[in-house]
Length: 313
Ligand code: ADP
Image 1: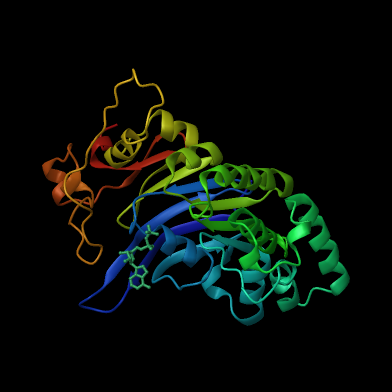
Image 2: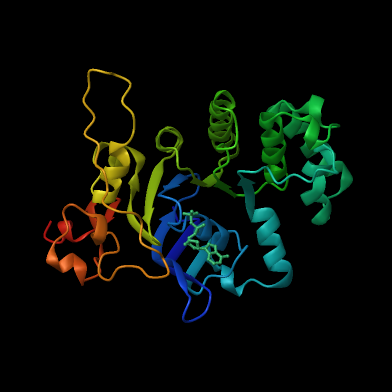
């Protein structure tokens, strides 16, 4: 099987000299069709920038993004519009529905923009409304819907043109906790039903563990660890991933938590540390980490880490 998404050495720099921010610093990974990739990392690590590059909302500065072997930078005019509409669907944290349109009109916006016939659009709308249980809110305006209903309308809109993959930026974090689980399970169900590929950002580690097949961990514009969810959660390798996981609450009060508290705050991406970008906060920092940039290494099949601690292994 060939990857649906192939990202190589992707960089994104915002601004101009002297006030530049390197939001992505040479990201490389692949996603297979039908895979659910969860991306985690603290705020400012470049997660949204990565998704926005893949969704062609912004242009990367360097590197390449290939979707089914086609380089996104080469798409223009009609082919770019088709990619944006038909290949990729979007799901955001703040719903982004148009307030002056009903649920039905919001869902059908992409089909009308892409010239899908009325008969086909209505059939698709009916299928999605039945499946997502939103038939009774189709005539309502977003302001009259609950958060969960609005997010279901967004999901229907994202699926209206039968995309192959969906990019989700914190799609449940604005919802009540009780509704979050419903939407998460729905997204997983949709993945299986339509064989979709997902790129999913969440700061909620338990959500990522529950829903993802693979996980990428970002720190200051770098993908520091990447692999199967089970491997990463069972055996986190990067000191940053270990620190992230040490903060997950354990339900059993008799189990002692060994929380790893990181020194200081995240350095500014406008002025990142030399060498390994994590070295200023890493308890296992070695001399080499202060000057040399670590390389990506595969430690077990499909499990990659970028850290000097694994240079000899
Ligand atoms: P995350 O999604 O992990 O919180 P972002 O991708 O939003 O991270 O941001 C990564 C870095 O890029 C941050 O330092 C942020 O301030 C900066 N950044 C994001 N968008 C812009 C922009 N449009 N202009 C300038 N800097 C930006």
